[in-house]
Length: 267
Image 1: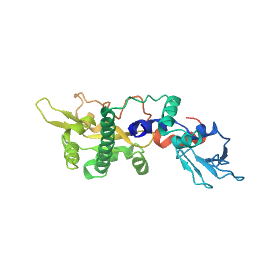
Image 2: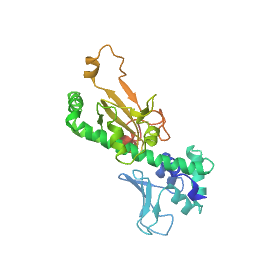
Image 3: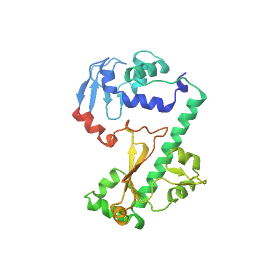
Image 4: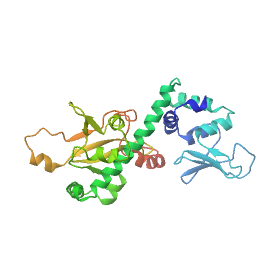
């Protein structure tokens, strides 16, 4: 049934479909600035009022007011049920729809929670970078000619030089330690308890194409390496794979570059 397909699967399908390419397979589209126009396929008209927006991945007719995404277009044009439209597009873009079960619903719910936790963590790291404790890290970035607007655009942050700063912040937001571990933000101690994965490092959040926070890359400060030349300190520490993050599947910065890629038709 339509409602039984997990939301993350639906979003994955839509993120892989180019709505302009899909609709152009049914009706001729004409470029109009950033969008495309055509005579509406859903009502008779002489002047084109049907618009397709590649940026927003939607269509809308100003004549009959019909509009929506790739699923709704197929449902309206091909007279399909929602399930049929989803399955057709899934086959077209290579997405496998798993058999529906209680476990699927549980996974979708977990994914939603992990996105939220990562957003909260990213906000905390950004706050730290602009605090007195993050001044050394910020000075280093500025020295590397990274401007203030770039820091904000890429949402860079800083993990404090403490074992439990993130834990305390996120626990105060009613996030369980179990979920923090699933998000890859904490590590378990051998004798029991947890500690922050990222400490005293510059934080680079990793986003999907829809700008949802999937995980983090963390770079050590050069001053720490200089202070402890004999210590074995990893230059970079990254989030592990989680239910929402698979290494090698996401291109850093694609969420910011996708519009330019569409406009210029090349990467």
